[in-house]
Length: 291
Ligand SMILES: NC(=O)c1ccc[n+]([C@@H]2O[C@H](COP(=O)([O-])OP(=O)(O)OC[C@H]3O[C@@H](n4cnc5c(N)ncnc54)[C@H](OP(=O)(O)O)[C@@H]3O)[C@@H](O)[C@H]2O)c1
Image 1 (cartoon, rainbow, N blue to C red):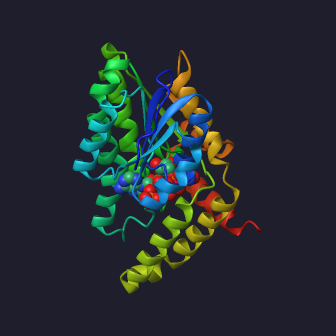
Image 2: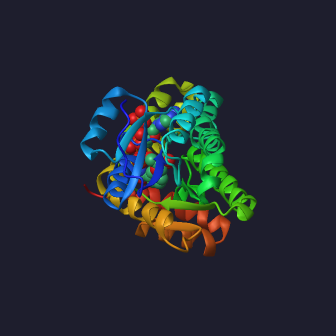
């Protein structure tokens, strides 16, 4: 993947998981708003698609679970102008009843969404310290309020939020700031990917567990379809990311989307047991909504 010839006045930002969805939209929006973007991808096809963004976007091979690729990316970026911003966006969404989730699937969820984000952060921090730069963590409203049947994903985002809060305080003397972005449902391929995983998991499940959770698994597949169709545009999340990277006083948290705001409010005012019932009822209602 060839290096661009960047304008040195442009601040450089690395976005992980830039092949699709929020990452791809952010690459486009940040180039438009005057940043130089390093777009982390895992395939030559994804890199080729990003070339349409022009000379200010440089695809870079980056699987966040691959220590050698992370180190190589840090070396490349260091030798080509340094780094002002890091957007830890790469992620997968594993949903399943917790009674039935294979622990290896839970480990993979954490490997990408939590350990991957921290590994990239550790590698890029020496560069970010030099510029007193910014780190943006793409969490989710699930990082504030865990819904049933997406426990693995919600747990990974809660962990990411805890790491982000601790990191922000640890980095206070360095001038490097950390912002957390918490979107609700966004229209991206993650829903279809997650539903595919959920169906495969359902098929492989112990028959007794499958029978016990059959209705809930079917409900969650319907909910995924609805969110995939009705989620907000990824550019709305990209706007929040751009604000976190460029505002003089960025927020520590950006809750993006009406559904996310409602869920955060539910999390803070509704007592636990009532909330359990409410969340189940909300999922059922969304699944039954006509197309
Ligand atoms: N969509 C939503 O409703 C929503 C809501 C809240 C938060 N989020 C968060 O937003 C972020 C982006 O998700 P999205 O909705 O834009 O989904 P997406 O379109 O599926 O994008 C996920 C990105 O992560 C990349 N990725 C997956 N595993 C990776 C790995 N090991 N190393 C590097 N990259 C990897 C994917 O690359 P490949 O194409 O190579 O697989 C892809 O570029 C995630 O952290 C997600 O949790 C999404």
